[in-house]
Length: 156
Image 1 (tube, rainbow, N blue to C red):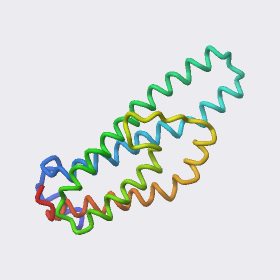
Image 2 (tube, helix red, strand yellow):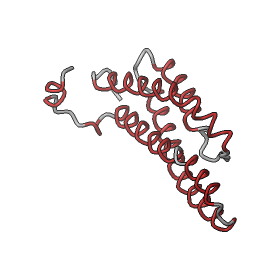
Image 3 (cartoon, rainbow, N blue to C red):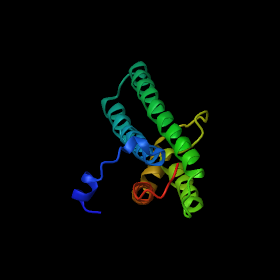
């Protein structure tokens, strides 16, 4: 579909639950990724500036709170997308659900909103090692789901 045809189609994104969920998931995962990626720089600044323990604790507490908020939003978006995708008419839904689970587990650490996620330099390094590949695969998967939803194949 070319951009002109897309723009002229006259559909409302929010009328399609699968499309809405996939776009929200993509945005919320991106918000988590951007927030989480600041962890290394914070650790580096704390180390280089030789900050007092009280100051270090304050900075990390604020960061932890911010990170928890964006992680919870991404986890909720994942749950919403899975619920909508499960009732989808796509013949690829089982493959998509499995890939979504695998990739979101890599990108978000844990998909359970009640889980405790502990960040360390080791977990951050491991996450960074997996990020490039997982992110590209995630974007490709979201695109497949969006195209399916835009083609009007999903009757939800």
